[in-house]
Length: 280
Image 1: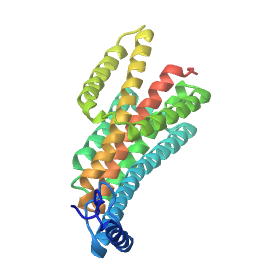
Image 2: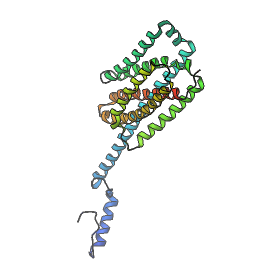
Image 3: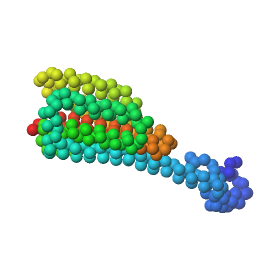
Image 4: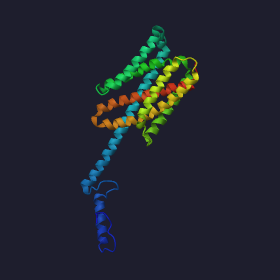
C-alpha cells in the first residue's frame, strides 16, 4: 500500500493510521496532484522553490515581451515626431525638389539596407548599437512618411492611425492567447509578401488601375494582420529560446523584435490610410 493512500476494508488499525497520516501531512505538507512526490521538510522546500522558479521565468518572459513592445512604441514616437517636424519645416518637400525621383529611390534604398543590415548583424553588434540603429531607421522612416501630409488631410491620418492602433492591439492580444500556431504560417506569409510587392510595383506603372490598387491594399492589410500575429508569437518564442544567454542577448532580441513589430504597424497604417483616407 502506497504511503498516503487510505487503507481499505475493516482494518482494525484504520483510526491509528488516519491519525498518523493526518499528523504527517500537517507537519510536512501533502503532495499536490501533478507534482513530484517529494516528502519531508526538504521536499516541501524543493517544491516551493520549483514553483517560485517557474513564476520567476514566466515573469521574466512577460517583462522581455513588454520590453520589445516598448522599444517599438519608442520607434513609432520618433517616426511621428520626425514626420511632423519635416512637414512643418518643409524639409521633405525641399529634399524632393532638390534630388527628384533619384533622391526618393536612394532614400528608400538606404532604409531597406539599414533594416537588412540590422537584422543580419544583430548577433554580432552591441545591444546599444542595435538600439541606436533602430532609432535612426525610425527617424528616416518618419522623414519619408511626412509625405502623407501632402496627400491626405489630417482627419484621415488621425482616423487611420487610431484604427491601426486598435487593430494592432486586438491582433496582438489574440495571438498571445490563442492556441492557433501562427509560426507555421511563416512561409505562406513570406510568399504573400513577395507577391504583394511585385503586384504593387507592376500597378505603379499602369495608369487607371485605382480599383485594382484598392484590392491590393485590402489584401496587403490582411497580409500584415497575419504578419502582426506571426511576429507577436515569434517574439515570445525568441525570448524563450535565448533567455539563457544573458541580459545582453535579451536586449538584442528586444530590438530585432521591435523592428519587426514596428514594420507591421507602419505597413498596416499605410494600407488603412489608402483604403479609407480622403486625399487632400
